[in-house]
Structures are given as C-alpha cells and as structure tokens.
Image (cartoon, rainbow, N blue to C red; front, top):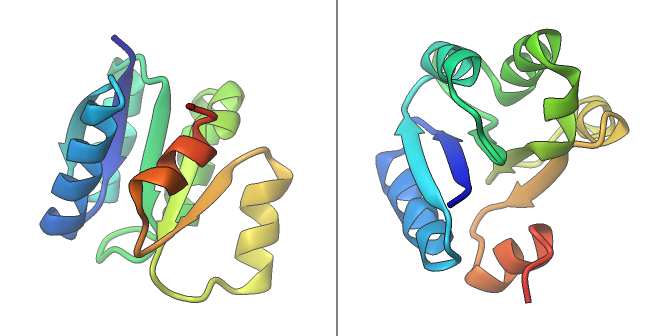
Length: 118
C-alpha cells in the first residue's frame, strides 16, 4: 500500500482526510505540527504529503521549503491544505514547483481528482 503523511494541527480535519484516503486504498500517518512532519519525511517513504497551511509552529509553505531541501522530488507529491485564501505569492510558489493545493472543505471527489483516481 502507498503511504501518505498528513500534517495538520486540526485533529478533526486530519482524521476525516485520513478516513477518505484510507477508503481510496492508502495508509496514512498523522502528525499535528510542522516540525514533526519534517522529521517524518526524513525517515518515511511517502507517496504524498498533505500539509495544512496555517499551523501554530510553521506555515505550510515553510514546511514545503524544508522538505524540498531534503528531497526536491517531493515537490510534485506535496499537497497544501487550506481553508483560507492564499496570498498570490504562496500559491504561485507551491504551484511553480509542481505542488498542489486542496481547498477546505473538500470532498472525496476532490481527492480522487487531485490524485488522479477514478
């Protein structure tokens, strides 16, 4: 099974996302802060990384930058979660490296489309 890392300080959102992804055949691991997420990427082999944008310790784009330094190929498997409007610079930065953005609230179909699952 393919493994996905979810980095989100909102436990409810992380749990719902985990349930959806597991229904799609993935296994998931959840951490609730950016620094732990960066550490997990160092030791795990993830098909995708979902990261919330607004968190108390690091914002999603900061997490992306740190993960990208470790392994640039991760950029195309990075998905930024946000319920807020992103500033144009952040959105362009993530997209320019091949990352993707998932707006909250999301539905199962949004995940299927994002991950190209039929």
